[in-house]
Length: 172
Image 1 (tube, helix red, strand yellow):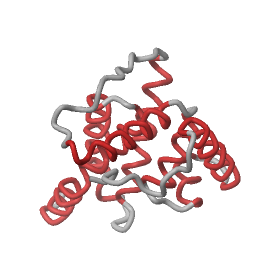
Image 2: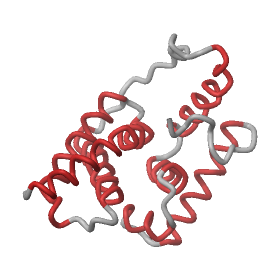
Image 3: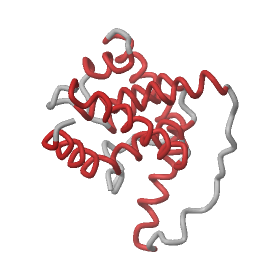
């Protein structure tokens, strides 16, 4: 890789690593697994960096993350235990409501079937279009729409109230 491309890659990683880890966490609900998956995805991206369209590296690496998590789930077919502890101690008291809302949303999101969770996360967390989501999920646009609608309907039922368009602090 030439020095200019390597510098572009470093800038991409430094500006997107936190977002990618949160994206992977939303899909697998395990921080260590999310970080490991992102590390593997970035390694694969590095090897293919010269072939990646410079306008869409985030979509490309998101697809790699999805594939890695899917492959892992298929290979290891086991259920990890999920803790339901209190919010982290470092959470500020004035952020308690936002934290409670975020935790409730994450818990509800984790209860969605994998395809619905993927569609909802790609559409509303990654802010991808139906077309881009269909490409990443390797399905039709109609499937994306139906999986998204079912996922949102299930989330509404689980939360018992309207879903906020953006949870305060979700992208931090």
